[in-house]
Length: 272
Image: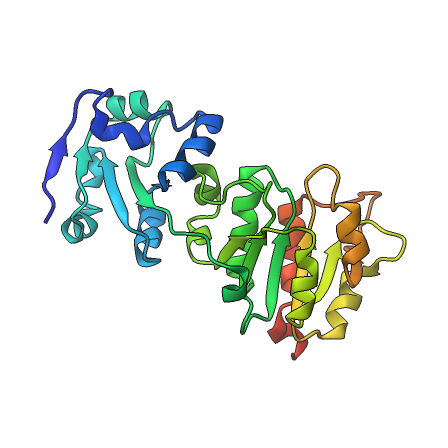
C-alpha cells in the first residue's frame, strides 16, 4: 500500500503536475508534451483507472482519503496529502472535489484500429470548446457511438474541463485524431461508412429521413461552433442532414445536436 505523503508547500516539485490548472494555454501545451492528463473527482479517477490508464500520482485532501482508500491501497504511485488551502494555491482554483490524479496518456491509435466492427462513428471538425468536446463524448458514450474521430484543430478531450464535463466518458469511448482531414472522408467511405454532414444546406435531408435509411455503417460529421463544416467536407459528404427547428431557431449547440443525431440514428432504433 502506498503511504500518504503530507505536503505543505505549494511550490513543492512533487506537486508539479497539478500547478496552474486554470492556465488553459499552458496546460494545452504542457500536458500532451509531458504525456499526462488530470483526472478530477472520485468518479473520474476511478473511470481512468478502470480504463487502464497508468497513474503518475494523486493529490488528496484529508476528507477524501477514506473514500479513495481502495485506490490508495492498489497503487504504487505517490499519494500526496494536502490541505484545501495548499490545493487551491497549487491549482489556481478551489478544488471542492478534493481529489486529483495525474494520469499517463496513451499513444494515439490509428484510425484503422477503430473502424473494424464499428457501426456508428462521430467526427468532430475543429471543435475548440473543451466543454462541448466533453459533452459530445458523454453523448457518444451514453448513446452507443462506437468511436469518435477528431480533426487536428479540435480541443484536447483529455484536458481537465473536457474530462470533467464528460464525467470521465472520454476515457471509455475509443477515439483518435484524423491526420489527413478532410481527405479522411474517403477513408471512411472506403471502410463502408455512409458519411452524413450535419449542416444547414439547400440539399439537406432531415435527420428523420437519414434515420429511415437504416445505414449499416454511418459516420456523422459535426462542424465548428461558429462556421459549421468546411466547404471541402460538405462537398465530400454523401448526405447533408439537418435537424428541423421551430420558432425560427436555425441550429443547436454542437453538443446538443450530436445527442439528437446519435439517438435518432442508433442501430437498435432502426432495426439495422
